[in-house]
Length: 290
Image (cartoon, rainbow, N blue to C red; front, side):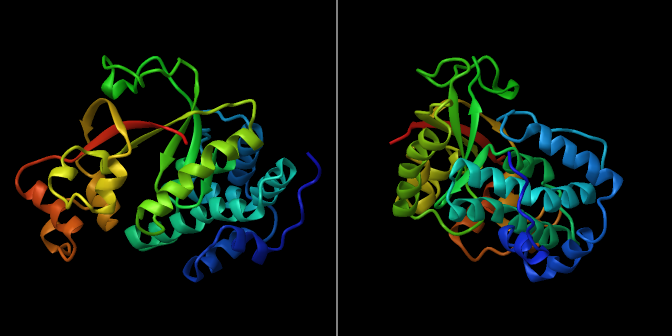
């Protein structure tokens, strides 16, 4: 790799789509030399870049050290994308997840921070890309699903160790069918072009949006139901009591649900299931890539 470009602070924050409320804190972290914790993070990110390793690094550093490390490593990651020929628009769309998660953290906790830093290590490993509406995390399949659902069958027709694309849904709009389809149609050609050594033909998804409860309680023509219908389930769902509340309302507080809004059909459905004593579930599905 050639030396990374010398991006200005404004250019770094632009690539990461940092919102105004978080800019001052980010600028402060970029002043002077890296702190000791950030140095550890930078070394971990440099070692993992391009490896498609499934397990994120776990150095003993703080959340703030991770933020500083991500900020300071951005020029190197941008250069790595560019050397592969990845369009700058894809790079920006992918890295915008950093600013998005800083903003979510402020909404959830009322402060500057990044409690999802482990998720963002995938972006800095070059393992995940946003193509249109959806994000795709390249990973290798297993003989069976995760331990939480061990004993059930894996994805039919997928070999152990086969490269798969994990579909993730960033908080950046709805799930209009045309937007979802356009994104899916980009995925296989993108990875075939830039990562030919990791051929993909199947995508998988683990999400509360695939919970089999939803199609029976939302309109059949809703975008969420139409999205879920694209997937074939491949193992039993597992209980995840907080996921639906967190992703719908961006709160981890399960003790004051009565105070949450019930303006939309989705909000009402999420809360009414809990009111009735039910539990939201994480469900697993797969689909062939077009």
